[in-house]
Image 1 (spheres, rainbow, N blue to C red):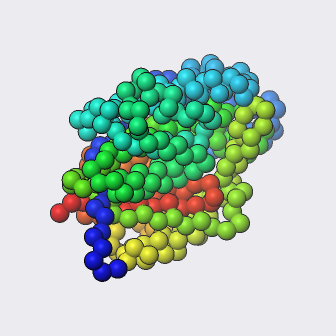
Image 2 (image 1 turned 120 degrees about the vertical axis):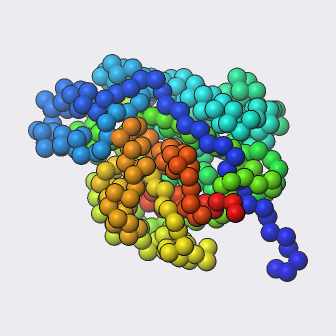
Image 3 (image 1 turned 30 degrees about the horizontal axis):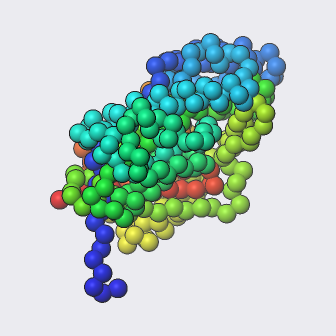
Length: 355
């Protein structure tokens, strides 16, 4: 429409990451899995190879290793979630504020992304006093996006920043995947989840209207029909039970390229306009499938491989860990940040380096 001034692009003012203090070597997790599953699951000898094929060296957990060796119910998991998530929120948000040279009172809007625990009041309300957030702050808690949550959260935060130029929007993507570890589920999906998932958080501050080296240019999503069974949670008295198809890498290799091509087309862009893809690394096989789908040389996604090796799959914040590494190494003119999550959904954000 003529005469309408376009909204200013949101800029990525700061980005920070944080993990809990407990470090779990993949070799130790495999040994514990043998004790828990080996005597009860005849297939475990075959399935145990998954642990060595993930590309993971170590992960972090919100509880000490021994805590996970006993069966836990919903109430115990929830207590662990609230205690651990609040501490991690305060830590990672504090880092993002320091990086932006702001204090908590400067934040106007908070977007909290988390799908691994239930908190009402939500996490940002629970830590508001400790952080020093203002009483008139706008709170946007988001649940259910899973591994796509980091990218979708970045998109939501950018649009909120655009709507109020000059305001500061804090995004916190935080997941405690380790708390979903189940002794009782003798399924391939549970073994795969046990081999992959860790805990972590990322926080970003976005602001529109006063510049910044990295701009959020656009965003888009693609929801595939009839794919609810690919990824998600079942909920029962013991806690969350993972829905996780081992065919995800095959699905990515076959279906991601047309979806990303369509998303970019809606932005008046093509694959050739993208200088770098920054992807959520679901695991070693998923990274290979991403390189195949996006027509990248095998080995291109080196930051993704390093993040999965050091932290495992932390769900929503993982891709922001990758973005943090890529940003520190120097982003090219245009990048695409991409993640896949329950739905089954591809979420993308395009980043543009300021000229």
